[in-house]
Image 1 (tube, rainbow, N blue to C red):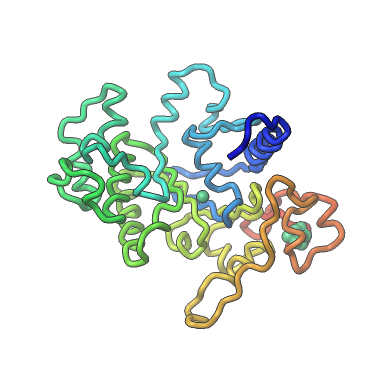
Image 2: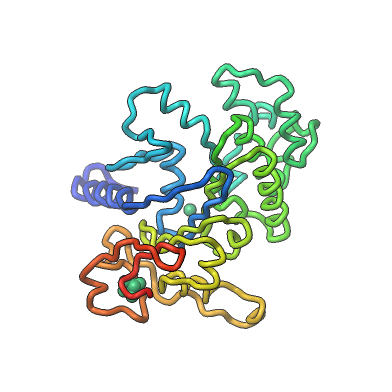
Length: 309
Ligand code: SF4
Ligand code: MG
């Protein structure tokens, strides 16, 4: 699409790419072992970018991606990076795109282990049963499965590496509603069985409500609020969190039109000054466009808002 003979256009493209990569800033959070940490935000909030950086699919343009003290982006000791990487797997939104259609399920599942020279005899069959499929499915191809079954195959592939942390990027949002709960239940069971930790990325607060131990709300690449699910749902402190919750369908307004979040997400390339939420915030004051609010502790949560109290 872009003509390489037009250098100015390429500069624009490059600038946009670079700006997009730097659109996640100062995001820092702790994920307790064997817990579920949910990162929630609208599209363009940077949640997938964070997930990809954690598994090494996207390098940061500057700064660090630190996991247990190892900076994955800068560490030069390959063995050290590999040791951390091995503990982290990712499950993607689209189970159709993330499975090689020409490979048998057995080869798909054991590939990450086989490529490191590990023993894989009987592994695919065992894992398929653990995710609620049949050992016989190992010889089939991805197209022979439904969306929910394919996501189970993706989960089996992630488990093959015996990870400690699984980054789940909207793992159920491409699935039928009836199948979503089954896959979430499976993930919950596997977490207990294997002692897993999840970083669960979603645009939907209601999906993570019952699963998350801690929820971080992202807006334009920054955390604006972080709290446990009870505190977040009963006592949301950031105006953006309040807006997201008022937009979520609830039983008492089922069947009625629910107002969507008001206003558009601004261009992440050129975010608003001060608090990036100020153009959409109904209680914004002059200070909001001048100064960026720092994260501070407030009634069991962390919140980045000048006026939250
Ligand atoms: Fe609204 Fe100001 Fe709080 Fe930002 S800092 S959320 S603009 S009140
Ligand atoms: Mg995404």
